[in-house]
Length: 163
Image (cartoon, rainbow, N blue to C red; front, side, top):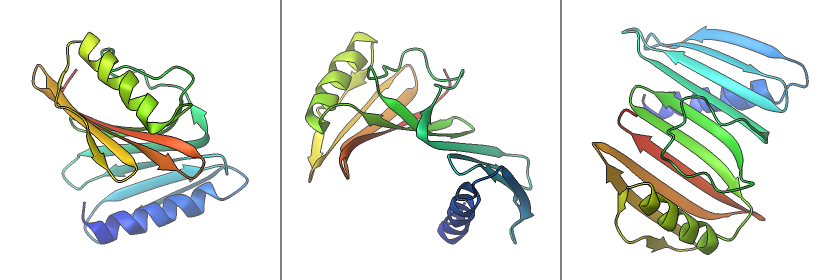
């Protein structure tokens, strides 16, 4: 998906989620994608279907949402964290969590728990106030970035490969 199209889709998703009642819209993009967006002011979702049949689903909620059924069982979840965003299509999944911890505490937790689940990870890297951890296991990879987001600590996890 090209960046301008992604920006347009994100803007539309925000507009739909800003409505106080349930709203659903479907549109076709100039490059043949069918996009369905829905939201109720507290949560929003977007489904994109390309002309060749590929599908991407994005769901977000400011209040948090349940961990999806297809969430990898060997990926740790920080206790009392809130899942605010889940997206997936093909062999890639992206999750966004708000953690009840500092970035350093979150990274220490994930380094320990990924290792306990058999993931091999490189030493984490500092990028300003954010921390990044990358690793792999059995043909799958992950990239975790944890950093401040206003008064919150936000963790974004990308997992590629099949479970």
